[in-house]
Image (cartoon, rainbow, N blue to C red; front, side):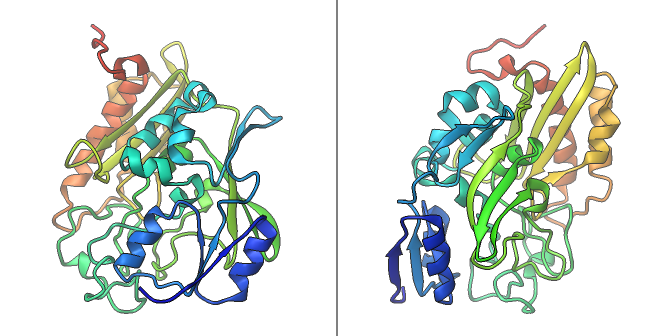
Length: 339
């Protein structure tokens, strides 16, 4: 580990000012991913700006429009178990609790969750090429062992996936990301926050240099009646998704009035298909229509050998999760399946 300069910021303006005064300086909140990257020599910051003392960033606030604002420094565990989130946004609560471990969720911040970097094997090995780590060096995952890699939105430069569970739910809920930087404040639609790899896989998101996430806004509609989060992985806990699905439905009888479907573990960002969602509008909530929606979502899916299985797995997950969303209570521990 290299020598670095450590500073604490008491407000957002100071934090932004400090981060822009020195090259290769990082914000420090929970640090759960930053320290991993540091240990593996993926990043070697010359300075850290600790934002944990900034007032107002570690709160949950109800908004006048009926929505909720999540402070960027509010911990993942506290968010998942907060009464407002459990009652109004249970999809988000369930997605958060599907990620990492209890210890990590106790430390990880909401803002930091959005900024996770890929868990691609090659990205974490400094001895091999990786366009995400070293642009222009190549992507060995395309011809190598790629079981965990992307099947949607890939490019010739990168097939890495984004690892967050929380962000899959935030994508389905149409969240907004509030940031502040040298040029002032702005709000980014969640769908536009993360990037596909294209020819710049080293850029994970659309933050400008020196910008700090201050909060995440949830809309009034929380889909608390019909929702489900399904995470398929190699082991039951502390494992990243091979495929995950966040499904939120608004029903009118057996007809779908509104639908949200977002996928994780399959692309460089949380993957959402408005075409598939629009297809479901007005249709019966049944296996046949969920299968048709899955076909729309996966129309352009492409496997790279070891991850070919993900295409069929994703289709089955979309169908299963759609049916699970019809009866969220059946997902509770000890619940009996409906007849």
